[in-house]
Amino acid sequence: MELLEREDSARSVVYTFPHLTIQEFVAALAQFLTADPRNIVKFLSEIHSTTDGRFEVFLRFVAGLSSPRSAWILEEFLGPFPHETICRVIDWVKEEVKRQIRNAGSAFGKRSLLNTMHYLFESQNPALAKETLGSVETLSFNGLGLTPIDCAVLSHVIGPCDTIKYLDLWNCRIQCEGLQRLGPALHKCQHLGLGFNDLGDSGVKLVSAALRNPDCKIQRLWLDNVSLTDSGAKNLASALSTNPSLTELNLNDNKLGDSGVKLVSAALKNQDCKIQTLWLNRVGLTDSGAEDLASALSTNSSLTELGLGGNSLGDSGVKKVSVALRNPGCKIQTLGLYYVGLTDSGAEDLVSALSANPSLTELELRGNTFTDQSVPALLRLILTLPSLERIGLEGNKFSPTGEKELRSLQETRPGLRVEL
Image (tube, rainbow, N blue to C red):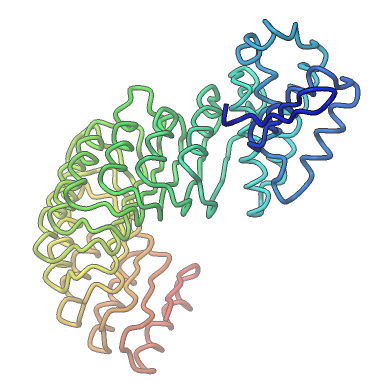
């Protein structure tokens, strides 16, 4: 009774609904009882074009009432809803979602697309969702804050679709609860971007469950800066060991430490693990943990790109990794060793190992402390590897003379970039 207010007058008794949600529902219901079906599309389009969101709840109710499952209880008291009105509402939802997909480049466009997906959710019509999103390959809500309800809506509309290849949810402020709502749909995407969300170990555990799904299609997984620790790496490593679809994994900016990297390294040794690109930049790896990674690299034949930048490896840690790169089965083409504490003392070991790797095409060494003493070794490396296309050396301590020597190789090697 707290939803109703009674007002007596000489002629009648009037009940009003002060609660705004009830008002919005009654207004939506009126569209099916009194509206002219020929005008409802124009009406819905007009109020949807407002930018302050005041009609969003009303529009969701309208979409929900187009669902037979939602309407049948009301029809018992009010009679059947006009079939033409229902069809026109469904057609409007379909066209509105398609229009918003085309305009989803800006933050406002992303929010508008998400709002129209709420209409799909309320309609409880999987066939409509599939028809509407059947040709969509990319859904990006990058930078848009998503609530757990938004995540449930996304899961519902993605569920019936098999075409969505890239789901970009980078920096959407998703936490474990939101990811739990998304869970049933995660395994369907080929590229899943979840970076810069506070998922924590429990959230990554849900992602690991998606990787274990027998129907998992995930090929590229970005989990950079998601508050993953070494404690949560165990679940992820277990899933990686048996997942044959994943080829790219981004774990940058997590607090894995040596123990977490050890678990990931163990997964790399498994024959079912097909990862080709692995980013472990700024994860707290030290020279103590480099041995486990080196052991994995010496037996892994699928990895072609490895990022280890921003870790405190020092000369000794890089030397351990370098030993593995000598292995004939090692296929590393791109290697990132920026800001890892390399000095002139470690240059010879690095060059000696990399010179034995004919597949190397890109080497990133910026932000270390090489001086002119390392120039002869680096020149030798560049001359030894005809496959090398780019070497990054910015932020080291070369003199102008040393830089000139290194740059001179670009004149003799067309296509080679020496970045200083």
